[in-house]
Amino acid sequence: MPNSIDNPLTQSVSPTDYAKIDPNTIHQRLNTSLSRPQLNADSSIRHFLGVEGLNKAQLQAIIAKAETFFDENGQLINRPELEGYTVMNLFFEPSTRTRTTFEVAEKRLGANVLNIDIERSSTKKGESLRDTLWNLQAMTADIFVVRHSASGAAHFMATEVTPDIAIINGGDGWHAHPTQGMLDMLTIHREAPRPFEALSVAIIGDIKHSRVARSDISALQTLGVKDIRVCAPRTLLPKGIERYGVKVYEDMNACVSDCDVIMGLRIQNERIGSPLLASSSEYYKHYGITPERVALAKPDALVMHPGPMNRGVEIASSVADGAQSVILKQVNNGIAIRMAVLALAMEGQRAHQASRL
Image (cartoon, rainbow, N blue to C red; front, side, top):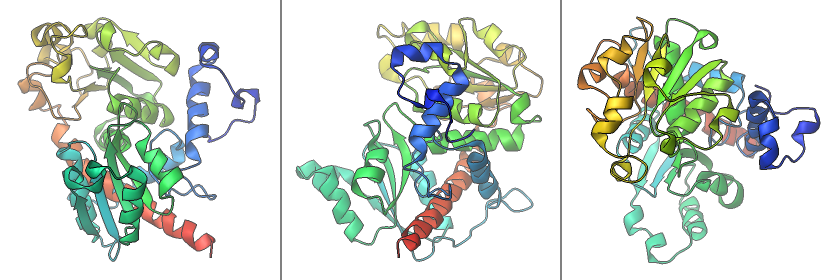
């Protein structure tokens, strides 16, 4: 997908006018606005803030880089591409899987790794985020991996605070989770029997509050998937999501019928029993990924989930542990993707700094 469009639609368009524009143009406009802080003049990556803002060739380059970290038997290998560099993991909200896989990826690349204890950091004592980041930068940091509850936090850091530190977005608010999106793309690339352009992908669950869904939908569109389906209770669907080029289904069986990939999303416990979602049993009855529903998809369909899973709510244990599940492969692929993003961003940041000398 190109990063710019040479037509009048690149000019300012109000939200109400978006409904009059085709989904491909909307997606391209998002790429145009979000590409600038992430890329050098030669289109190399120096921050990784979101898959929106990157074109097809750039996403394919990340996948190709990740592939280099597997040996001929599909096992991950170490490569000291970040030897001598310091990576600081700044997780302003709790995470286990994402933080751990980033740390494993950083160490496999030979980086010096520092996990900053945000609960005891100066930001908890009243220091501004800007001052905290400047102090960490002064400690010779080269990369910040950031997870934050505020949407746009990583973008703010890359553009307003520490532009000479490579910023990797580990998830920001409801906005984006780009490395999860890319590990999902790597998993599909490695496991699906058909190319992206020939796939039908069903995404099931809390689309409205899911940064994973946003990143997955954008990446799938950029990589050429024409049939992206979403299914959820109406209370868990963003208003007007159809204009972003997805097909909305109310019936789960129809949504997964003859599809190639079924992606489940986590339902957060605070949604259950609220006006958004009556009960976990009701959700499972209508939207759970069960053996019967998987049987409606293609025989070689993949079953995916970003984790952590709520078994018996979002997915049946027999499906999560079954032959079509690639959930554990997603975890392994997450290390390779994070290695790729870290290495590419550091390479791009070095090139950026050298260009100014």
